[in-house]
Length: 364
Image: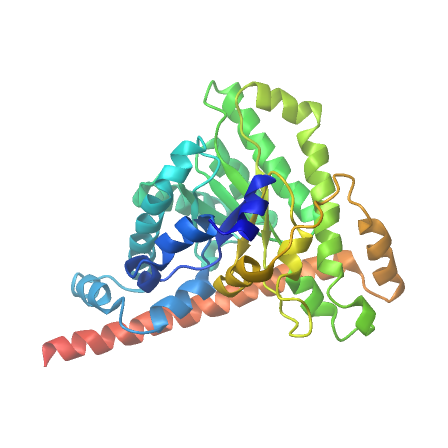
């Protein structure tokens, strides 16, 4: 295993790949990431699948076959995605079993079309989980107001959930509270309290959003400060009597996951966020490029402080510069949802076009 990446594992942080393609599943790339780079899971989203399915011909055979059976639109996409994620889940299954369900996960996102409808999201989460039929597959639900309701209901129903599109401590705490309520309801109903979940905080998008509004010395600092603030809230929750009661009953914590940790600023260190967010009992999901960069020259020099360190001081400095972090968190969450919707529309349009092309070619 790579020594730089192994240092993160040694302090209790899981490394997941923020990518999936049928090519990397078939050519041994994913297996090599597991063996050589200590990768113990992966995440996906509509943007990742848009790129994967739109590049090359790796999905053409299944698109043609599914189209011939009358499949189209979202139904066809989920067939493609679940085929990939089942293969990936099987690769990570030994890790999942060895960690007693804590690690070795893959993730599939619900349709962005329904995320503002809690009932439909809850139903879709249960259906997709059952269709995939893998114990180590998370269903991703955005941590919006409607999403929070669906998260609680899904956890109560026993569906493992990756809460996505969290941008602030407050949004994280709302998602965490939904998780706790779901577990508490299971205990009250006499059900197993062990339903796994992660809460995904997006980091680098903060710094992209403010880079043109702050002096150069303030660039690439806000996202890390927000993460530090959220990590303190996470550690405080794990130390709380409410959580300790659930843990004593057998529940596993909803782990905090760092998302959007690839460096966007070419002038900044390419391993900036991974190095800054080293912390036990967390997950860092990173793109291939960042994974390889950290393997080559990444350093683990400090671990996040459980008290948040300088988070509040740094955030206060940004407020003096006119940055309203509460308002920006809401804007970033909406922009993230809009971006996934755009990718979703493009993804479905691409599948429709490729399906028509393949069916037409077969008819000639």
